[in-house]
Amino acid sequence: MPDYSAQISPAAAHPDLFDGKMFVWQHWETVEQFLQRLPPATTEGSAELQWIWISNPYWMLFPPVDRVDHIWSIVAHAVARNQLGLGAKVSPKLEHPETGSRLICIYTYDFSNVEDVIRVLHKLRELGLVLGNRRPIYYKCDAYAYLEIFWGNIWGIWPSLYSSKEML
Image (cartoon, rainbow, N blue to C red; front, top):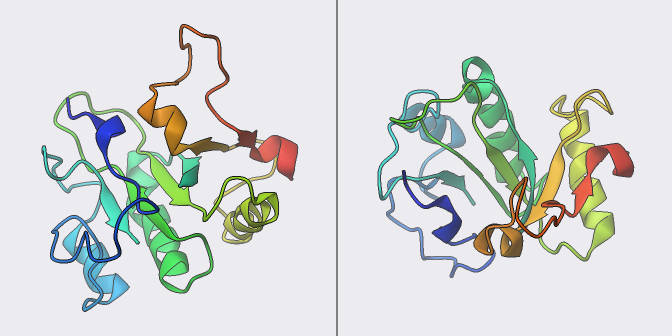
């Protein structure tokens, strides 16, 4: 299985780092062309293609596989219009194990700027991607991922900074 924690975040990357990379939205293509080129429900993952990017800390969505292309389309268009944060990524189809959902991360500019974190959350809700407190989403900083602080970690550290439940 690919090591997702080792992937560079768009916040840490030079703006031209992803130019010409097949797994990233290119400035020369429309969002529609990008979505058709890399639909996450069927795009095969590999050592190079561990995430599909459109471009810190991030809000996490876990849409079911049968809805991931639609939800990713909403996120990709909102990022391209500068309505969300600085970028987003989605996990492609993996050979093993295939789960019932995919991860979409919506990056913000700065985890310490709570106003911006809330602004992005409100936009996600406005787009119909967050349903109030019925199914909360969580906000995680890349440092936690790089340090492998996930659910059930040995230190008992909560793996996210915020939840939509406490911020809405």
